[in-house]
Image 1 (tube, rainbow, N blue to C red):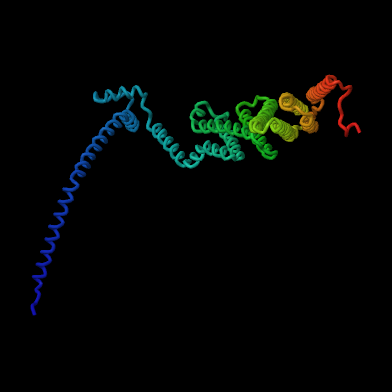
Image 2 (cartoon, helix red, strand yellow; image 1 turned 90 degrees about the vertical axis):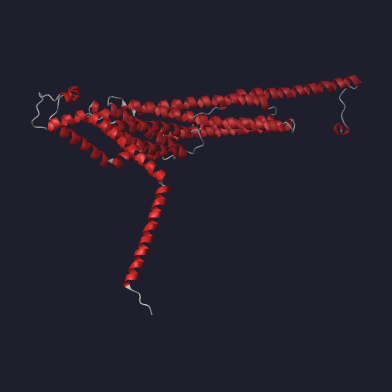
Length: 440
């Protein structure tokens, strides 16, 4: 057996280490050769960054040199205001003279401490400031999602902000000018209030039920309350009762205008359907066309009656119960009733004019005329429940048409009878010829 000496074992380890070192050097050289361009670019970039930093430091030093000198002079107990610096600092002295006299160290330190305290307080209120800045976008989202209660709450909070920070009697004009964040937030919320009002009025232009209509009018009244509160905050000399009465009257006008647009939309749909039915019935002959037009006239009368009565009942249910039995409110109630009376009279007159033109153009038989008279009489009696019965106005429309139809029928009969008698005279017969069944 051969013995393995420790010397041979150490020699093998040294050879292996040398081999590993040589392999590591080769890898290092290959890596350096592979990434030589990257190293060169990084070196150039670092040199550019260092030069840019040096230029920036020089610029900062030039801009802050006068302030540094003033602080240093203020902190130097041996410095006197009459002392002059060397000729090298002559330009700095000119800048100091332009910026004003040197303040004492206590004033400068107090100013710096106040600024630092303000920044710390701003940082501590960071989340609250973010919530404040998000109020306009939050109100916009509430308006788009029809969350009227939340949007009105934000509008009321805007009044609180304005009263606390902008209209406070203890705040001066300079302090108000510094409240740029609050001013911007309040103005943005005011714009969203206008959008909310337009959206609410636009909703009244559609087919809404009584609960929905009451919800919309309640939101509009709360919006008027927000506007009234803002006016009261700015100056308390306004006649609040008069302003409230004017806002209520404007709300009633907007309500009737919006609902009137909904009524006109229904009439326009009937007119388009009537034209389509007339065009489709041209292929079926005159009788089918007349019957289709008569059905459209009756449908128009029924829809007009339903919508007019619904608008009047909604107005009375919403606005009549909002007045208290006082002198000023009784005047407002008289104004509201006069407004409703004018609107109802205008709509009835428009209906009668449209009915007269449609009857003259499309009704040529007594059966259709009778159906139209029954529908119109029912419409008039329905409006009579709210004090707008117009049955007496129907006679001047239907009587001439009925007389014209009867006279036409009599004229046709007389003409036929005259032609028959003429034919009998020409044939030498004393009277008209009758059949055997008639004579017997």
